[in-house]
Amino acid sequence: MAVDYKEPAPYRRGEPNPNESMMVRFDKACQLYGLDEGLYNYLKHPVKIIIVSIPVTMDNGKLEVFEGYRVIHDNILGPSKGGIRYAPDVDLDEVKALASWMTWKCAIANLPFGGAKGGVRCDPKKLSSRELELITRRYTVNMLEIFGPDSDVPAPDMNTDEQIMAWIMDTYSMHKKETVTGVVTGKPIVIGGSRGRREATGRGVMIATMAAMKTLEMDTTSCTAVIQGFGNVGSVSADLLNEKGIKIIAISDVSGGYYDPKGIDVKRAIEYVSTHKTLEGGDFGSPVTNEELLEIECDILVPAAKEDQITAHNADRIKAKLIVEGANGPISADADDIIAAKGTRVIPDILANSGGVIVSYFEWVQDRIGYFWDEDDVNARLNRMMTEAFDAVYNTAIKYDTTFRLGAYIYAIDKVSKVLKLRGIYG
Ligand code: GLU
Image (tube, rainbow, N blue to C red; front, side, top):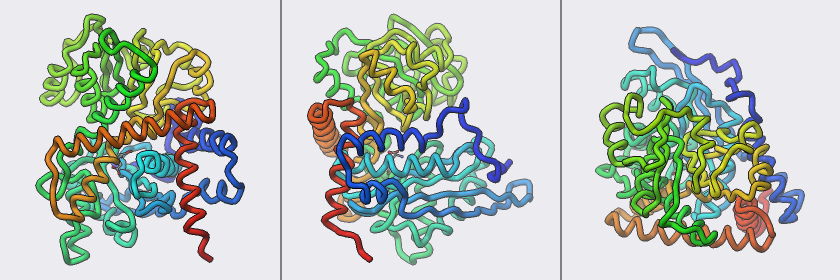
């Protein structure tokens, strides 16, 4: 059941790995911005990488050993922040890329956080709840010196949820001999979670999409959208975009997708998934594969599933006018120029999906003050911060005459490097 971590994770379709994809954009942005070589070298590498072994006695009595990672890219703006993913193919390169993305994401959103990411190489689908709990608790114990409300604050990511965050909080608190709710975000509301956190990433995707459509002068009353991924991010994005009058013509998840040019009843699909777990067996339109779905003619495409879905192999077949990256890294770097040459605009992941970490920040703040806001308050603050982040990225892209993606990187690099200079190098 445990994955043999000594073998490198099989890269999806042999694409450039996510860390290379991140570095290509980072390098281009540093060149355009003219970043000092020393600062470039500083920001290129994570400040800390932790790899731990996680032994667990499985339900069948056998001892299995899993591998866990936490990469702290930096803590220049504040404690490092970022999710933990559980997946059979997660590896250090992926976690490194995701950790740096968190640095840029937090900087763009004006949060007082650095960037980090964690991962455990396991297949959650094959694990019992007891096994999942043991993996989580042992991973947390291994990270006791790393995690902390003022040092490094994890959150959910792919295949991790509120329950897993509750186990992390409990394990950490047991060792500290006091309840430390602020050590992790994305917790259940009853134990210090924030209202609106669960929907925050999808809500942020909707806010970023609406802001982009306004800027690009797209007519929201006659637009169509295709959403890849129907987990937390994809389903909430689809629902909220639909509420804004955008017709959702295709949806998908790991089991495959559906296309209906007349428009899909998103709420019915959400209802269906809540009882059946996936979209499989539903009647939401003509069946399409995840690959076909990306190529459907539409105004807005939201890839909200996983990395490297749009690469040099299929980029020229994408017909959307606007792509909003709900997932982290759904477009590989080798596809950027092909997409830009077609005139397709991309709202990059480090802006588009930052709603999750923005409300994580609100959760951390509420845990620290011990006073909890109502959902309207959370949503209004999210709306304001996302809109400000969008405007900052847009203005930077205009100033440097570049894409929204490179504008986003430049804005983040400018902020982080200025703070780094102010703090100075100790040593
Ligand atoms: N995992 C989410 C992300 O990639 C949220 C991170 C957080 O809330 O710290 O942005």
